[in-house]
Image (cartoon, rainbow, N blue to C red; front, side, top):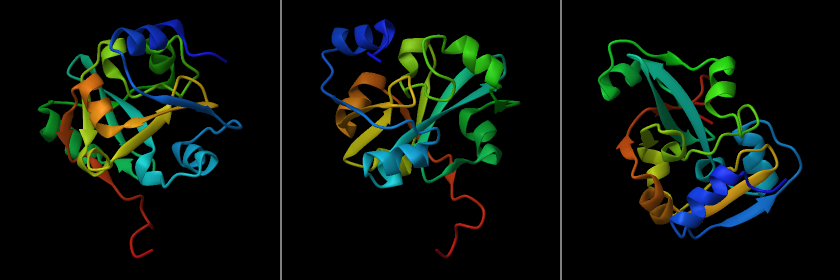
Length: 162
């Protein structure tokens, strides 16, 4: 499946430097990391939050979870929750459910990039499908997205001490 017109136009208009790879269907960010033979800390997943009447995109490593207790104070919100699957389908009509690229400007969302991922040299993420992945230098991603760098990720429960 080729890149969506919206994604292709965004990347082309900004003269983005990236590579695109295809792998067998992978539904989770951890599965994407395995399929791409990458450490989960280099594979990004986009988490969409709804708070105070607006949507926000939080980008974290595949190996971590969003710390919902930190979202409200860090983003300055009175209330916040995860976007529902129905909302995601409406917000990302050109993407397979759960495979949206962490490129908030395409969809009009501010992006909050977790500090642990921001420190990586490269980033890889779904390109709108569960089979295609964009790879780029972190500096290039930051140029394209202008994310706010924050600390909003935590280890999954039970992952400590491994």
